[in-house]
Length: 251
Image 1: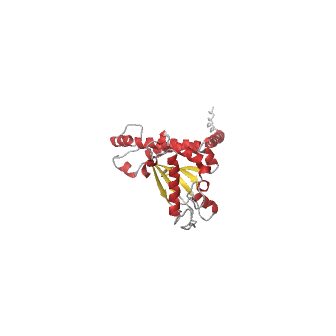
Image 2 (image 1 turned 90 degrees about the horizontal axis):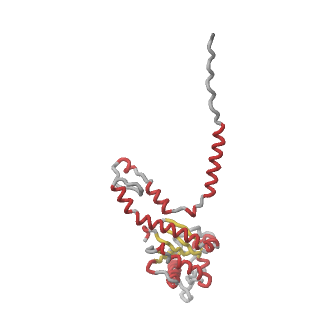
Image 3 (image 1 turned 90 degrees about the vertical axis):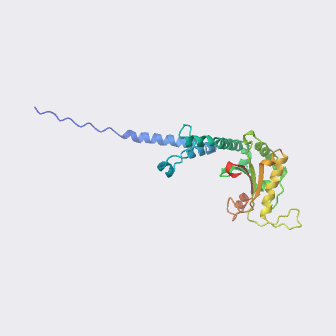
């Protein structure tokens, strides 16, 4: 009697993969919605990036320098990790300062009187020139901005910013100054106007208690615009005073 041939087992169904993929996509969308860029610890992120840097030389040759690691490695790695601790601590304090500034100046940010950002120079607090100064003038509108300047002075005296250096940078749009030598305020060019604005902000902050020895000032005229000077809106953004909590490499 001939034996019955065994049937090959049926292949398992893959229908579940579609449902599983939909679920993973929904979870990804959910966590993306929860993500808040303002809460990113920039110091920690920079430290992670440094630790992951790998060069061709480090692969082909013996390791002579290392990133930042929590694990004990070669002496060069360990030495670099230890030497980077002070700068890592300062980076962490700068990240904490940014979070505090975003919270403290939330009303001013909402009303476009102040903007807060960070770049290679450090933490940048920008003062809208139209709020603080009349166009073509370096005299502070103190009646409207006194409370903001008081908040700024207290912020710069925070213990987290101890031993930090600050720079106040004045900027203008590309409109030439029109005042004559007989005017109450006379500036030969936008260079003098931008520097005078930075100096006047420092004078008021000093009157309100900051240590002016920790500050420096600079005037950039219209050489560092944020937006095009072809529009009124762009000119308004370019007329500003930046107060910068300097990163270690920009003293």
